[in-house]
Image (cartoon, rainbow, N blue to C red; front, side, top):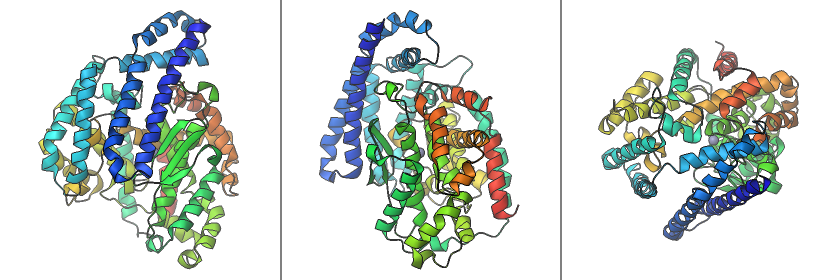
Length: 503
Ligand code: ZN
């Protein structure tokens, strides 16, 4: 059996290396590639992904998985070997359900749609996207049909499990509804209070100093630059080529201190997750983060629960003032802390504060379910978007550019499965944070001294090292002893913002 397991691993390593090579081409495209490289790069990326897909869906992989079934059954669930066979089988079954002709049709359509969106969005031209989006909806429904979903389930379940395996509409809808019910009065209460002044965050902050300060912060968090590096891009992301090369990207605006700084912290949270995975799982389907939600829990934990906390800034703010004496010399720690936590219902998800952010996600989640169910037509989507923003955030969407066209998700991929992970991540970040602090009450005091090793060590031991061995639900159960609950997250928001806004 060891021989068969090794054969499987060899095949998986090859697939993993093809994905790693494609990732490097993508990284280059998003950082340094001159515009003239786009066409050839698109072909090269498609060729590598297709090769990886063919190697992974090779019937020989299926046969090995079948032959390894008794071996898997003889081992403990959480062993590396049983987990490898279990998780690989899950991914193999999913990958082999889509006919090759459908995959080709969908990826061609996705490229065309994304290309059209890059001009339709600045032109505020939803009409140009409507027929393409109708086709995307049809393809998304067909993909769901190929994957299948349980008789008592929802068509979106087939798409959600791609990024957040184990999560379903039946569990997410009540969870998100309860969250929204708690968030709405909190947002309203905050809005009745005077808004903090954050104008000084928009003074002039030279890029190089922002860069150096951000690097110092994430290095202190524990992001390992011997196994990573940072570069500039338009839309920051984290990317992994192997366990020894996990990179982050960032961007800076010289008139907006928060954007670059918190984005750098966010991506470092994703990267530390990948850097913390047990090297024994490397090169296999176990050697990456387990779900979009758990990944986002790590990025949001470092960005928000640490990076926007009072203990963190009580230590770090004097250092920031020393870097920017002209810009922040006259600003107290308290004023700074209030400014970086300013709550303001707005139009744009990626610019939203901690309290309103999930309302943006829940709006998208509900709209995509309605589209998939057929209760909402694509042509009525812009108006449904405006109505949802009025109802949930009390804001008027002036145009589709700042409305339904703002996120690329529906325009470059599929409708369904792309948004729930953001809010799941926020909910889980607080659940994990509460568990870490219960196990180590000294964490807050250490953060106030600029120390993060106990926190990172706990995250490594309970989350990172497992890679994809456990599902999100299993991790939450192991760590908190209960299924995922919004209580820690709501408790965190109410305590923090209650204190900030004197509620
Ligand atoms: Zn993220």
